[in-house]
Amino acid sequence: MSLNVGRCATEPGTLAAETFDLVVYGGTSAGVAAAVQASRLGRSVVLVAPERHLGGLSASGLGYTDSGNTAVIGGLAREFYHRIWEHYESSDAWKWQLREDYGNQGQGTPAVDGAQRTMWIFEPHVADKVFENLVAEHRIDVRRDEWLDRENGVVLQGGRIRSIATVSGSTFAGSAFIDATYEGDLMAAAGVSYRVGREGTKAFGEEWAGVQKDARHHRHHFPDGVDPYRVPGDPSSGLLPRISPEPPGADGHGDCRIQAYGFRMCLTKVPDNRVPFAKPDAYDPRQYELLLRVLDTGWRETFRKFDPIPNAKVDANNHGPFSTDNIGMNYPYPEGSYEVREKIVREHASYQKGLFYFLANELRVPRDVRAEFAQWGLARDEFTDNGNWPHQIYVREARRLNGEFVMTEHECLAKREVPDPVGMGSYVMDSHNVQRYVTDQGYVQNEGDIGVKPLRPYQIAYGSLTPQREEVTNLLVPVCVSSSHIAYGSIRMEPVFMILGQSAATAAALALQHGIPVQDVDYAELRARLTQDGQILEFSPAQ
Image (tube, rainbow, N blue to C red; front, side, top):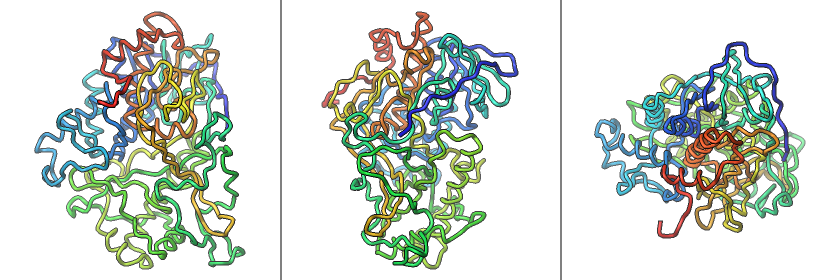
């Protein structure tokens, strides 16, 4: 695990600055929620988005929501899922499937909660529409395809961000700023300290920190005895692709590794809406040799995480030892340049497209798996401007703020009280695998797959959204929050990001109203306003 301090600039951008009360950087679900809340509070706001499509993963394939206990999802987040429900109440929404044939599907969380007028499972284009409607209704000034100049684009004066500039030369001045990106680029460029990777168990006294070779939560590990070598039993032949030669590290020790990325896919079997998996450029079937060895063991869980969403589609998530998670191929991403990140995203897309083509067409794939997979394809009516491929890769973690308060497993597991809560989480502390290595016995294995369920919903501290006082006093960070790796595994869910985006904007508005640092916002006043706007800050078993 590394602790870093980002660089900041002292020169403005090339164009005259446009001035707003609040500048939100990042078009994620948190960014939209923050901008909408600021507008509702009467503040001028601009949403500066590197993205062309708003909503982040919520509108880019993650339709099978990791909602946890929905009773603690309030405010704008609940409004979002209510608007999803409203969409699917119309018969016109059901083009490829009868509504009654979809049913109330969902594991743990039903798709439709009629009593609460919410729907938690949805198609990507529907979420995209809801986000666009929200910014249109509130007349949010959205600047798309505007990328922060990370080297020279942040102007600081007296511990406050005065303006940010983008690589296009546009400059946005503000009294307060919110970093709503998955990567934490604004906070890093502003000189705020942050973490990347996994803490060891000693850092915060966490049981589930660092390397955890014996953890096997999601069944994303290899069956016993899978050989890692090109020639089975012969180490001199070299390792198969996508296996690291590096030792995994000692249990409980920290490192700079991060959990795997991938794309959440929207697939369908409906012939009139199905785009068959195409062979990608530079397709190399050797990249998937390890998957054949898994299948040769009799493993047959390929379709276990093809989770049903409306209109005869699925949200296809990673499942198993060799799946859509591109393990170990994303380590440079959090702090990488835009060029480095784009290369990583392209490699991930190529890997995943090749994986699907391989499973559907490679004659060495067992017939039963191949025949079933060949029936699936990309949904023709999704991501229509991107070859039916998701716009956003799943950045499960990148930088994490080193803020006024650090959320750890102790808070998530209700072992310690949380000061000044501004939202709640409830999902499993969920880390996907971070590395694939060779065991001491000479077999291949994955490591980093953790899933520890909180006893009950937990509170998230306001201090986990604020930088340390001596660093920056007018910035809030609702996505790359101040937390340990294992705690972030639970906090990092899309409903929580919307909750924290709304709370961050509320705090920013109060800081501006009183002319004070965000660290000095009166919590009683903040809590009262959050409660008035529907945020859930406490939980009782009756909820």
